[in-house]
Amino acid sequence: MKRRNFIQKTALSGGAIALGGAVTYAKVPKSPFQKHTFNLKYAPHLGMFKHHAGEDPIAQLNFMADQGFTAFEDNGMRNRDVSLQEKMAKTMTDRSLEMGVFVAHQIYWKEANLASGDLEKRTEFLDYIKKAVAVAKRVNAKWMTVVPGHVDLRKSMGYQTSNVIESLKQASAILEPHGLVMVLEPLNFRDHPGLFLTGSPQAYEICKAVASPSCKILFDIYHQQIQEGNLIPNLESCWDEIAYIQIGDNPGRKEPTTGEINYNNVFKFIHSKGFQGVLGMEHGNSIPDKAGEQAVIDAYKKVDDFL
Image 1 (cartoon, rainbow, N blue to C red):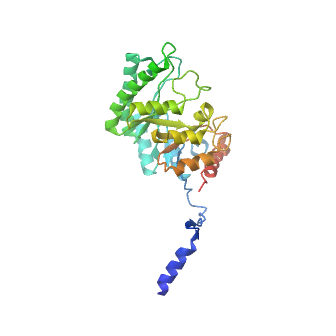
Image 2 (image 1 turned 30 degrees about the horizontal axis):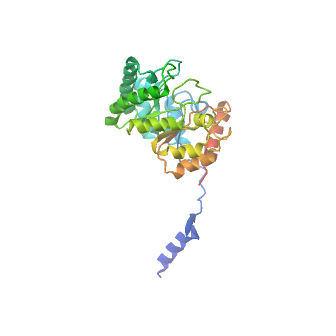
Image 3 (image 1 turned 60 degrees about the horizontal axis):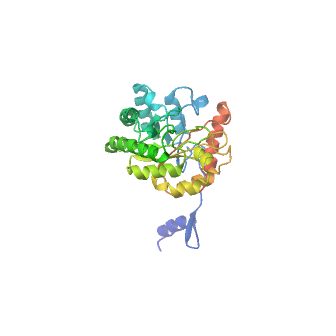
C-alpha cells in the first residue's frame, strides 16, 4: 500500500468507529465563531428578538439568520405594505431563510363560517384565498393558514363537515395551479371555545375527503397537547397529511423547556420522519428583554440536540 493511500485511509477510519455493523462519527467541536446549525427548520417571528435586533423587520430577519435559524413565519404578512413584503422577501432570499406560513383566513368570533354552508360566506372565504395567492408569490411562501371558524349549533356535525369540505375543495382548485398549500389548523377548546376544527383526527378526515395536495394539516403542538395529548402517536397517525408544524410549550405557550412537553423527543421523532418543512415558533418568550430572547435561542439549541 502506498504511503499516501495509507494515510488517507487511516485518517478516515479514525473518525468512525464500527459497532456491530453500525458506524458512528465523532462530533467535530464547533468554532466559537461558527454559526449554529439546527437539525430542523425552526421559524421565529417578528418581535421575538426585537431587543437584540431593534424594531426594523429587516434587521430582525438578519439577526435570526445570524443565530442559525433557516426559516421565518409571519401570521400578519398579508396585511403588510407591498414594499415591505418585497424587502422582506429579498432579505429572506439573501439570507437563506425559508418563508413559513402567513394567515390566509382565520375566523375566531362566535359566528358560524364555513361550517354553516352559507354561500355568501363561502364566496368571501374564496376571495381571501384568491388574494392570498398574490401575497404568497410576492414573499416566496408555499403555505397559508386556514381556520374554518365557529361551529353552527343549528346543524349536525355531518352537515357542517360536508360544508367545510366543499369550501376547501373550491379553495384547493384555486391554489393547485400555483403549487400553494392551505394548512388547516385545529385549535384547542380552552383558548378558542366553540371552533369547528379542534383535533388532528378531524383535520385528517377532512384532508382525506378534500383529497388535494393544496389542503393539508398544520399540527400545532401546543394546541394539540391541550386538546388531545398523545403527541407522537397522533403525529404518526396523520403524518401523511401534515405539511406544517408549530411550536409552543404548555402551560403558558412559551419556548420549549418551560412546560411539560418533552420537545427533545418530539423533535427527534419529527426528524426521524425526514421532515423537510418548517416548524413555526408560534409562542411568546418566558422572560422579558434580551435575557428572554437569549433564553429562547438557548432552549432551541438544547431541544434540537437529539442526534
